[in-house]
Length: 485
Image (cartoon, rainbow, N blue to C red; front, side):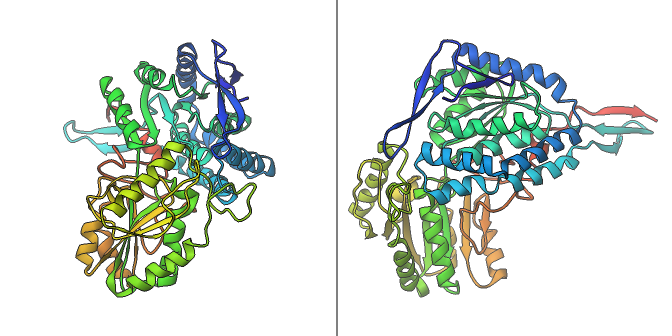
């Protein structure tokens, strides 16, 4: 059973309500979780608000030491096994994906711990008062309401809370109803590392009650900012709720990541990157490669190579079937949506090169579709499934235009052997980042030196979550102080 954690203490819901956690593949109940009531949600925010009074004034070095202790703990075999096994059980993910959900954590924590040096004031000469200096202090905002998803529950929960905590804020973390156990481990780690009670609070809410209670938390006067990772439909609702109270939010939403493959690309490496980037975790990643734009000079050989690689992959239950490399999708409606997108593309003239256009419950086999283009739902809408669409182009300009023809702009990738050409083209692709030459989905970086700045439906704001600049985002400059010398 996964309890709530409020004020540093595990607790049941005040009304005793719980909900079941089911394995997506087997639909078996693998646990239960407390379902927070309105009273519990208020208590979590109140605990965070009270803890903020002292946490804001702790030294950066004290916060750094806690982060380094968490990094030490998460690297232990105890937590490694706990995180990986819980992740597999709750999400039916393949073992490699559960491993990836754990492996970058220690380095991410260490890198962020080192960024406490960014928590400093700036001094300027006054432009209006002779002999005076202007001091711009950075101060924490208060209570941050963090909502993280199920598809990489541990690492994304860690990302949601790390920078705000290091900046002196306190947190109410709301889990997905699909993965509360995996996400509660993050809070357990910080408490074991010595984080004071109330600084980080954990709530889980049943699917039925989540919308109303989420709105209540956003409306709470002590909540100063909302950090949400999830799909764009829910992101719009979160943004509207926050707007009612003039509260800032950062929303990392969906993706429809394009990969541009030019004639001079290394075909073998590019094909491997597309196969991995499109099929990892059965495509259930916001950075998953969904649109592949390839120049005609290498199109046939490149597409054939990708097909050969993906054809070796099988979806199923990796924990019981050693031949299954890809896990199930998280709901039957998701699986149905993926198959529907592929069928509609075929009806519109696209060619299904790989896949049977069917599903077995929540299991969808890998699909590759050629001739996908703007106007087709498979091009325009996030699939969140094991499918990649290909389109062949003649020119670089055409490739860039197609890469930018999407409402999403989270990440992108580009394959060319000419680094100078690559840099020039990458600057024309409208995405939060362009990996050159690489895969859109890339977990093995502890943090970026700069934030993601995306447009359209991928981000409503600048996402500093994976950036060493993230601390300043949750630690804005306070009003200027004028000191006469």
